[in-house]
Image 1 (cartoon, helix red, strand yellow):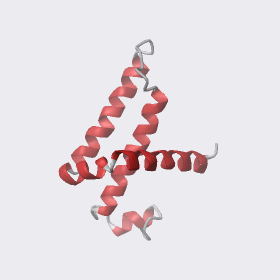
Image 2 (cartoon, rainbow, N blue to C red):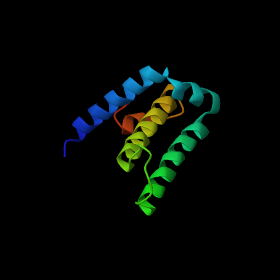
Image 3 (tube, rainbow, N blue to C red):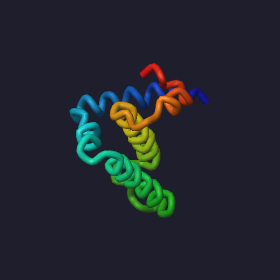
Length: 101
């Protein structure tokens, strides 16, 4: 499995969406903080749960794959905002190789 290829493709998608939506996630995070991140992730988890538990329900154009992609991107957006607002310790950033951000 080529995780870097997946990561690059999904990051490119997220950047295109951010450009199209005008960075709405950062604006909402700025206003509401981590609770906003939790709500977005929880909504996706509920969607994944519904599609998993009830495979016969219509996905209305958002497949379970789409939901997992969104979940990944919402997690990355939350991480980026936590770094930007300096809510993550330097030790934690070093642990993940992000100390140079």
